[in-house]
Image (cartoon, rainbow, N blue to C red; front, side, top):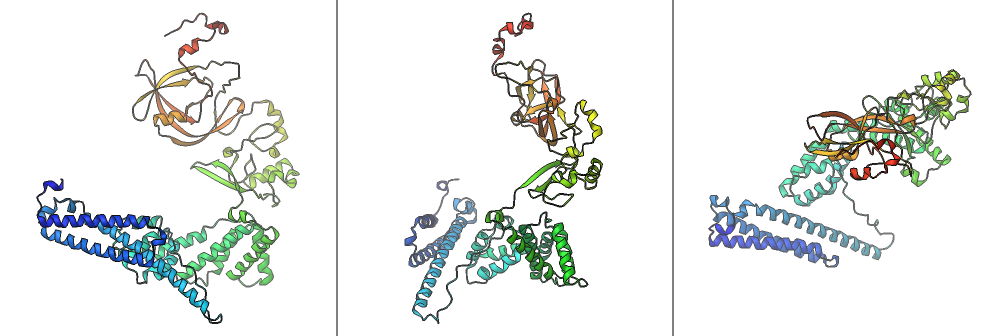
Length: 563
């Protein structure tokens, strides 16, 4: 409802005009402040702006109160000023502008104070000069991790909460120093004077729970990764993480003086075999009868990583980025499993720095002993890597002698007679025929135009490639996106004729194919999703097909065209 249709008194018109003018002035003030050059933002200028802003806001509140008094209750539901809640919008604008001006003023005052102290220090004797001016302390950013809350709470309390700042300024600093889950928690709270204590208590209630903080610290302490290689980076990581978790527990006033046996057992189980062996020898040499302490283990680990850094110094690049890991992907019944093997390999047989299939000692063993060792150590029978078996191994290599799914070092002489038989993979896979297209030689593909229903109920005319040698049906990813079909996650292999090519498939879909001439005949199809089906497609209508010279196809002379 427009304001012209509502009968208002002269007093109401005067109040509404004043409110509208002052709201425009405050908006223009915010715009001008953003455009104002830094040279003009002096202390006097900012103070003058603050005083002018306070005067405008006082006039605005007075006009608002007068309008409220002279407007009947039933008319308040009709005036756009009350319907749109213009007062609260202007109030938010005023508070934001006041906070920005206050921040500028504080920066200028701190700069002037540091400059004044520097000048005064220069005039004093050198022996009586105070300490140099320290840089400003930046507010920490709290992301919502429980273990980070105690330190954030202490810093924010000292720098903001226990200061003489107004509640509006404190709330502004509070909302700008949180991120992630904490920022989502305070997003709905407006920057108002009476909302600061509510927001602060809301954060303390959510993240100040000691039980949750303790749970997060213990999860980090007990969930550390195992040291796979004796490198300075991995040993420093486990040492620093353990020391940090213990300090966090002490900050929670938890007595950890008697935790040394537990901490030592936990950390020693995370060490690599060689470091664990050195630790046991270190204990025995120092005190064989007494229980070791955490300080002893900490000193041992510090000496260990310093020695490793001196023997093999790590560059700045490798400190920031741990050596790239090679991943062998295997599948399990519940999903995917990734077994990571770093580029620095440890032989399972001799414990030296190489693969087991590169081990000379292992290759000298008889085949039966090599097979027994692989079974005992639960290594993959195909790639000799742990954490998966040959049925789920994704390595494309196989035995060089018989081409079967096992390593060449595990090939037995009795298998030679069977090499004349075609190699059959013990891994479940789908075999499909392979159609090639050589330059200068045309291959006629058997295709058909069919109708397929999308998930929205629309019919699409698509071309189907008929392959009599395929064991399954396939659909291109472009068609799946076109039809909007829902995909099911799977893990399988598609192989061509003679195991020439192997393609992994990750999704399958269900669709229904119908004839163009009889819509009642529908065929449900379960199809596996591939990026592309074939590299050759009919590019034009049937006339293009009939443009072939028939003397190249003698058997087609007797076939009449069917329109």
